[in-house]
Length: 342
Ligand SMILES: NC(=O)c1ccc[n+]([C@@H]2O[C@H](COP(=O)([O-])OP(=O)(O)OC[C@H]3O[C@@H](n4cnc5c(N)ncnc54)[C@H](O)[C@@H]3O)[C@@H](O)[C@H]2O)c1
Image 1 (cartoon, rainbow, N blue to C red):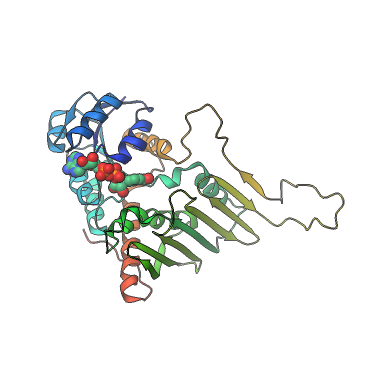
Image 2: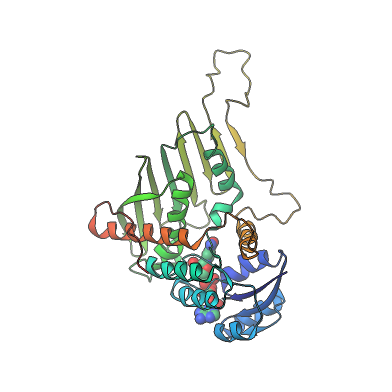
């Protein structure tokens, strides 16, 4: 059993992460939140052995193997550094820090400690994205030429956030990881165009460049209802493409013959479109969004086992791409992600 100390018992941790973490082979040795009512509610609900208002006290007083945290960009860096300094494996929700430089300081500390720091890019672990990525990485799919994506949200959180810091750091950062992951190569330039419908209602068209010459365009914005599907990705190769709708439906299009003049037309598994959707009536505690699989990969990393869990180095890269996107909003030019200084 891995002994976990958890920091931050807010909405995301209480609704998405702790319910999945406690299904895994762990002992929730301690939890921590500065808000007493959230701390008490999480301690009761998830059966934590000890509760702390202060993360330093938790780290000093509890024997732990690993620390998880979902607090926010302003606090993640200091908390991750404190846990790594004690030789603990760390899971940090996205964004791993407020800046790429902050994320790079965590990466350096993880390397010094020789301990893993895993970043909460759970979209890589959603069933649909994983199926798509496996197809895209197959020899059959071949080189990837282009990606189009839509990743929307609502103005709820951003109407009083005129510089959209929260939108960029909490929302857009997912795309900064997912785009290079789906395309199988690093982003080398980012160009952003924007349009503001009304205060808090921003639309972005973001173009990503790659060394291979492949192209990606992602539309992100704060002007859609969260009661509607919010996410769409499509990657094209040569006479084939994979699309993922709302992390729910995967379609793999290839090059089937026309059917209209063929009286014997049927569906050919080697050429016609393949579709996957989950069975939501299955009486099973499935997490198709990917939190359970991501936390499972984190525990493997904490145990020193091989894992494909998103590393803090990948967190640094995503933050550098995000910062290039923001620079491009100001300059209007294509901006290269800069290496983050420690
Ligand atoms: N991957 C995802 O799908 C996803 C979804 C939502 C949020 N998140 C991320 O999770 C993080 C938390 O988001 P949230 O919506 O739960 O926020 P939240 O404000 O609801 O929760 C944060 C919690 O941290 C506590 N806290 C603040 N400072 C602290 C400190 N120094 N020590 C201990 N506790 C402290 C707060 O009291 C609060 O309970 C953010 O980084 C966010 O981007 C990820």
